[in-house]
Amino acid sequence: MAVEERFVPISGREYLLAGSLLLLLAPLLGSFSLIATGLGLVVYLLGLYLWNVDVDSRPLKLFAVEVGLFAVALYLLTLSSKWVLLNPSWGFYKLVNSLAPAYPVLVANALVYRVRMGLFAESTDELNFNLAGNVYLIGALLFPILVGVVLMAIARFVEAYSYWKLPMTAKTNVTINFSPKKAIAIFTASLLLSPVLFHVPFESYGHSARSDGVALYWKTSGSLVVVDVLIAVPRDSCGVRVYVDGRAVGQNYDFMVFWGPFQSLLFLPGDAVIRYHLEFGKMPENVTVSVCRTGVEYSQGLNGIEVRTVENWTTVTFELSK
Image 1: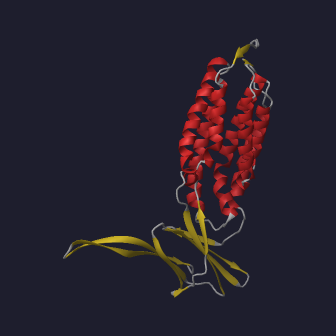
Image 2: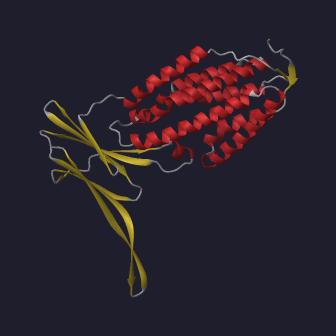
Image 3: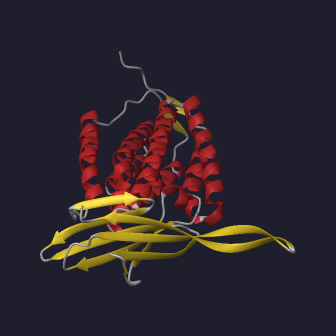
């Protein structure tokens, strides 16, 4: 037996509007972004709670699922950014690789968001909520190529605008207007695309090795042996040296700074990585990488404890001939 719909007065729409605007604008507030995000989340949750009391409990429950999925996505992004830092991909491809493991979780988050917006639309007849949900889902599907980030921000703006246009009353006991089959198909597609995105640009190396923040990739390409050396540069670095069969190579390398999710959210320094691209007429026997880190040394002198800066070098050797 279907539950009869009825209209009830809406309270809390001002909290939903203010909270959604704070969450939308927080990334633009620099060092205050974390505070604004936390405040926006509290205000938004208060609005959802009042909606839960007056109209429907499902949006609040769905939002809790969204937050859980977003936390999982952040965790996966943190892990992948550390691994991808020393991947042979470079530039835009490295960013796509780092986003790939969290891609299905972000799509699942967007599907839940689409259902929540659909409930708001059914309750209020404000169809812009459906527009927000659809645009956000499209943005999540395009997230790895960064266009999606813009679409997701636009969707959040449309959501905030929809709260501003809310009527005075809303319907209770509305049905969810969303196809489970479509949701499963979209999520399955994201699962299949995730490993593909993780391996673009599909460059194949015959061999690879990693050790102590250094990665080595090498392959035979025609008559040449191609060797790529990637080095995670510590923040207290005082130099990097690369030797091939005991001979030092030049300082002609590519440099890149890579930010993980928490580094971006908290405005922390990014991780630096450099890449040496080397080509040889024959296979080298070994490649040695030395990384310098600045240290402090204390000693007892005539005038008391003396402090001086020292260089600490760590060396990693890769055998290519084996």
